[in-house]
Length: 465
Ligand code: SF4
Image 1 (spheres, rainbow, N blue to C red):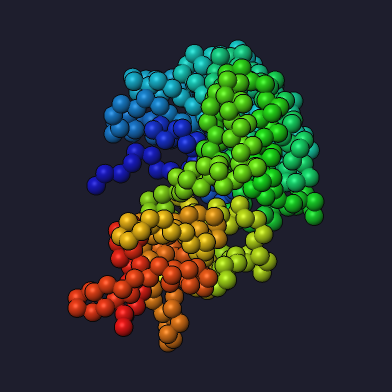
Image 2: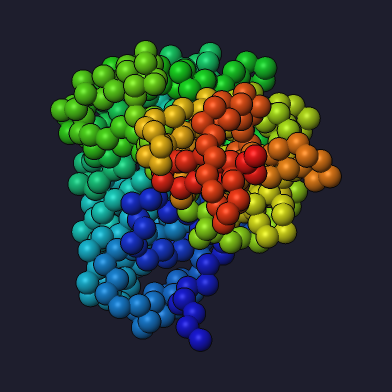
């Protein structure tokens, strides 16, 4: 039986752009591991340690034997650059020897990892094959950084990024949209922009801050001051950030599934174009391409099968409220994000699923509600669309069939549209009445049958007279 040459301590993370890389753990966990917004390495098995050189070498040699043509290697886990330069040079040498086709090596990097490394040392690492360092800037505002316990400052991040640039390495910087909440949003946006201007990263991306395990730990740093940004607030923060950016040639992306609005381009060249896109999303969200891009970002849940992590104290009520630990989840961004990782399994239970965790939650009826029925076309060319309570538009058809059943032990109709991964959106009463306006009767197997057409398919609703 084939087994992968590296025995990973899960969970293992890598940037999306390293999807084709061999992930080689040279450390376990993150040497800092105190950021209150980060849950990547909080499990006991991810406690930080440098891996033994012999174990790393063994993984390299096993991979060389069983994997052909490795061209890219990502050094895991959270901050491989914490290792001494001498040790990193040794690893890079072993990689070059094992993989003759090697083109690039990359790693996550904390600014603090570079405090004691000189530009000359970084240049040596580059010479030995290191190419890209991914730096979680998160914010350029010292107050935000302090509140989230990042352990870095504007200056420490500036210093690290300047060293990376001077050594000729490529920097890829990540910023968290919404990290300072409402009260610190303005200074978060402006100071992060000034830090980017000072350091001119090669790549820059933004993600919306989220807390799949709850906000408790994060709120400790803010007390009662933290008011999460609404979708509108997130857009306004991004606009302010973009307005203050003065970049020469940075590839900018906000295309992670957590972003409502996908922005891609090169800054400064595309600055005005992106500002126009954000302004449109603020002033006329209906005209901005929010929904389609968001749909495209739905995670591949069918490929994720982690062990059950436990029961989460999260309940979706019949009227569509998400109640976490007895309190409604007020933040629509979180509900929206959760709805993309929700799956119903064969046991009839609902789970929030990530590549490494699976939490069972309670659902009183259908997890989502469908309203705002819209109809275009006529006859069997008719298309019926519904909008869910998380803002997704579904066209009834092959991907999203309509089913009208009844509640157990009653005649009360229960019309649902299939969303994905076993998750349904139940039509609210008004939408069901609107649907009734489009019902037609046709003969099916000699019986008059009532139903509606959408995308050329007839969906049965009941018997005709
Ligand atoms: S430094 Fe990075 S990996 Fe470590 S806790 Fe902070 S965000 Fe997470």
